[in-house]
Length: 175
Ligand SMILES: [Zn+2]
Image (cartoon, rainbow, N blue to C red; front, side, top):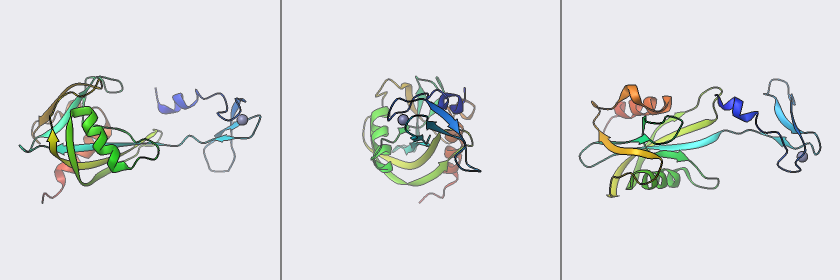
């Protein structure tokens, strides 16, 4: 199922509970969900996610094996959705702590990912572990462990953005 299919599940106006219908408001724009009763336009915006590629002291890169769909059983670096009003950097640090128990410092932007027809925008940071303990820290992971550049499970990564960001990360000059 694509995100577009999920978008069509919105049937009622969040302002007045009137019916939403799909309308072309402006030539060239996508059709919008408009309330028949109050005229509210329900813009379906992207969702912003952050991911963090964390390097440990022994040079290992942290990946989590997902315990949830999408991507159940596949590997991804820690990450998740940014809360409204939250800074990207705060969200990246929070997700690393919540998902794999590590305190991290960020070391710059790795890559940006967006895909036609898909809802998430993914922003990936590089980070270094400075504290905490690598462990499964929430119910979203089956397993967390480190990989070297040579052992990353390329055929078993959760998302296109996971694959693309890890490649971009490994191609970065190291300071
Ligand atoms: Zn309405």
